[in-house]
Length: 73
Image (cartoon, rainbow, N blue to C red; front, side, top):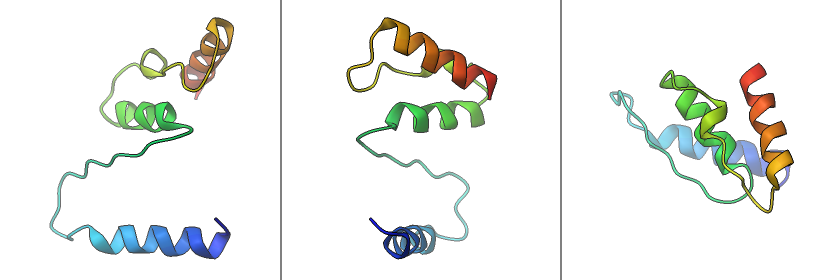
């Protein structure tokens, strides 16, 4: 996906949400979905790192590094 395609996709998504909405629940799949979940949890004031998942093939030490990095942000 190049920059123009990305911006077009974001614009379409932005225009799809009704202006009077007060809640938006989105879903996605693939690489970085645990990061997205972490961002949603942060907005909901939950402990961020605890919600980070293993993802695609991450071992125990990788998961620990991922959670530590999330907690510092």
